[in-house]
Image 1 (tube, rainbow, N blue to C red):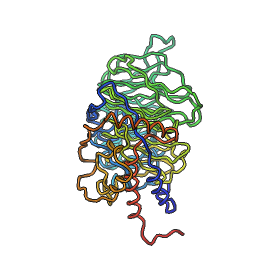
Image 2 (image 1 turned 120 degrees about the vertical axis):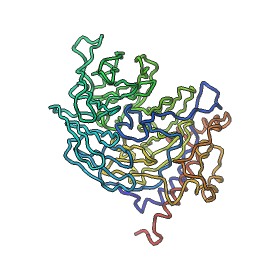
Image 3 (image 1 turned 180 degrees about the vertical axis):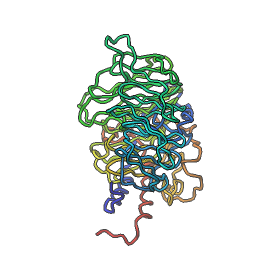
Image 4 (image 1 turned 135 degrees about the horizontal axis):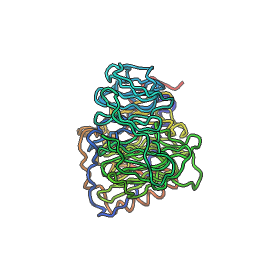
Length: 530
């Protein structure tokens, strides 16, 4: 990736201001529209994006009661790409058969191991990095030295590990194994599960990362369904054998929270359209009218089917909110308030979502426009910030396709991985959000600010509050207004015709001004076009 090429700088800044998205998210609620949605609740162990899809439950959500800060500058770049996790100030990158540990602050290399037969996404717990591939290996997080390694005599690849409560859970040659995280010794092994509707032998386990929550291990069995096993014993607790569509080479996705389990089969085996269990989702081309992938929402305790959700990627979820991307937009639903919102845009343009505190982070790559990364309010669906991927040399939407180009979030930073580089995006240090006049109210109440007000705010430098990453949000009481809501829906409809997602104009203007000012300070005065 080429970082901030000189000839694209002014065009980029102009596109941020002129091309700001209009409208707002369409919202609906079974409760009073003016009610306040509770703070997002996420597990206490989800402070870091430390394993496959972030957490042992694969929830793609990290905790926090404030908003995830807007990425505004390229903090550093590393000339390798691959699967990424972040924990305790260190970025762990799995590239090929090896693992590289980088400083999260400046991207400098702390250590590298090229001989561990790695594959998939590592898992970091306390002071140990757990790596799978042709074996399971534990590395010292500080030095990269091997703590222990366990082989199983398999020629296949072992998918990403799930590590929780002192145990490692992996699928090896169709069998689900539990290992002691301290030394790799076996705790239990289950080769398959007997299913009532299956005439053949016991169904073996699909080779994907399992999800662990509620003292249960949730796994997929062949093409027959999904099961829950006791985490300590490996004994089956329940199984869901509802007809699971056969997707050829497609593989299942499992996301587990305290109350719900989200299970789906993704991909149809087409070129570039299969999730191999260790990438960031499915992003192959679809034929017009092709059936959407179906996600079953199950009761986490007994496997009862609660509902069905359409999606194209593994969804993101907390204990109270789920966020999914499907063909026509990004959708969120709050189970406590019965409130939902949808952000539209070009068909098949949204990528895999994640949740950082009160922000939904999601990529957008329309076929007829410039790809970008968006942050939207998890309560309202309104835009908080956007970052154009042209800033990291990705102007062609096809170059920004997920899963070839992936991202993770953590510690106020977005890490983009693809095209041979790992890039860290952070809030600007020279220009703070409040220096540009963009406070916490802008994202939720931005539909009440016109373009002139936004321009005046862009020149303001009098605010002195702390940045978005640390201060509490005080806008809950104004999250919904009947009058503004009706106007927003109309704007959203008009912009879907233009292939742009429905967001607010003033938030885009302010974020555009931020980057323009940062660009002005970044480029030397004597740097002229050749």
